[in-house]
Image 1 (cartoon, rainbow, N blue to C red):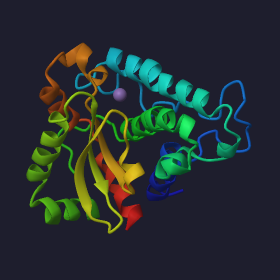
Image 2 (image 1 turned 90 degrees about the horizontal axis):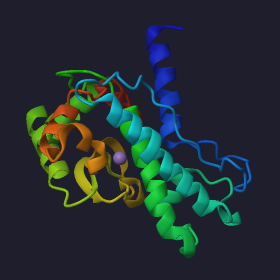
Image 3 (image 1 turned 180 degrees about the horizontal axis):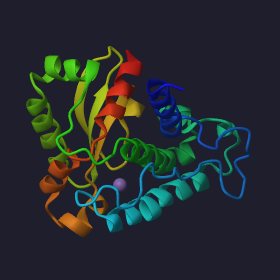
Image 4 (image 1 turned 180 degrees about the vertical axis):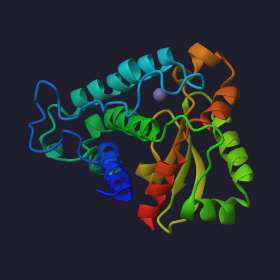
Length: 236
Ligand code: MN
């Protein structure tokens, strides 16, 4: 296998992790472990030091992300109509989710999905920038990488309370910067997330305390632009 093929295979496998039916196939919803699984981190817990500290990674993934998985599994446990649906299926069409569990699926399912996107895009990469088609699209949409970084940072830092800043791709394949509250996900609005910035305090408080802007700025040094750029290329 060539290096390019190996990279592609890895990217496809990671994409499946982020978006596919993670453990949600023929398994009945009543399986003791539940149909959804916590993804494994694609890096060592200390791999993002000093930008993101090990303790934050451990708690964020092992407690917060894991709790969203557990609560999503509880929400769908007795819903026969949801058997076999992927997390993407559920979030893309929340109206198809029975009303009595819809809010739980929106909150906890969004929590699972958003964090999957988040972890998969991270890798220590100081000064890294988008490549290929994504680099071109960012330049034509936002004028320059610096303008893009500035706009996305402002959107993320400006979230009131808990939420996310995003770079997404809309149905017309245009890039968009947006923000969501709580665990709402752009996928529920018909957009595909490319880059996720978690601005819940749990994402940064241990290291950055109240300095959300410093955390967001540091995050730009741990974005795996090769991976993110490849996700964009696959959408074209
Ligand atoms: Mn989080």
